Amino acid sequence: MSNIADLIEDYILRRLAAEHNRKVELKRSDIADEISCAPSQISYVLSTRFTQDKGFVVESRRGLGGFIRIGRVPLQDLIYQDILAKIDEDITLDEVNNIIHYLFKRELIQKREAALLLQTLSTVFDKLDAKERVSFIKSLIMTLANFS
Image (cartoon, rainbow, N blue to C red; front, side, top):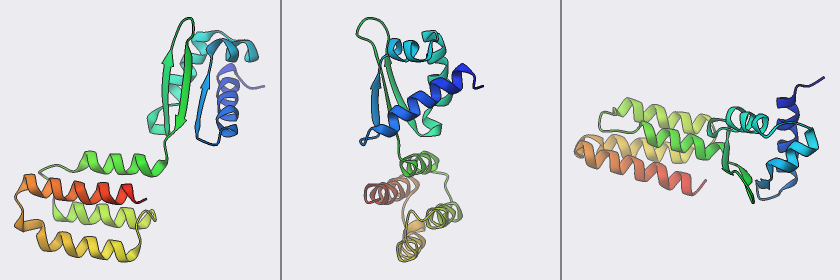
């Protein structure tokens, strides 16, 4: 038999799967009634199983008229966010090349895009100061993310 946390998670995932826009709005009281659990158990499940690291965005408001909004974040968005966070003034050309190879291996960019990026960055990397280099690399990554 499943534990309460598993039942809550399954209930939320089923409701989320039924929505085509990858978002669902629920009430704690409805979940608690359906599963026969305490609202604190729902909060525990939300904070441990529906995290941004696992591809979810949760907005919650307690009390009368309260709600829980849960949305799925596409994995590729998380990957691009993580990459952007790693780009700073200390980044090396080798690290940038590794990022491009990573994107290619994950099929987020095509071979042709990877080749263009590698050539462009190797040509301009040393010609830009650190601040300009960070801005340029981030703008390239954000452009890729926007076209994914």
